[in-house]
Length: 277
Image (tube, rainbow, N blue to C red; front, side):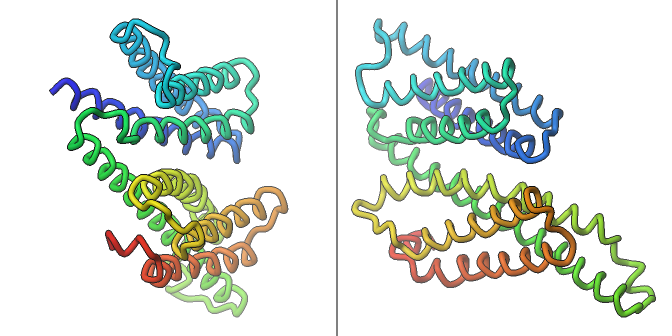
């Protein structure tokens, strides 16, 4: 019973870390101090849990946890979280903090869901199944964010066309103004990108554990990274190139086509996603 509780606590730590990364991503793009503070305190809580796990493991084994690969991964994740907290608190270098946490999340996920560290075969199998569940949930949530972003972009294009043709009427009044539509579409894309990235990290780990000799040229993998690239370019165009308005809405619409292709077509062409489709 205690082992099950500790396993759930480790999983909670991964989820909290994921939320922290999402908020750090938002702060990385927009220098939002509120998001940074919430992300910092979530990360601090994760650090406290990790430290308790580390100290209890040292007390249980009577040695420093670096003698095996999985012990080393755990200590490495703890070091990355500690450095991230120090950098965030003292230097406030958002770029370094965000990418340090991406690396830290990856290492923590590898350690938490690695079945080799569990003595019980049933527990190890359950952990891998839960890894798949978290991966699918985060992927669907990111797809949902991209879908709503597409809806707002479509409404933006409709509103823009009505205004350009001076088609005044109830349809125009019922639509939100262009600024709100563009902002809503962009925020949803900002939410979807890091969520998809974290989902891919967890999904690749699941595939590595469950699909020996997995082909990295699998269509679903390629499609997912194309999708991540398309929306990352969208954010880059808006932030770095000041692209906005109709041009950004058109790019968002084109990127959503990749969502549809990846979900409905590439999933069917995948050699291993059919296992749970």
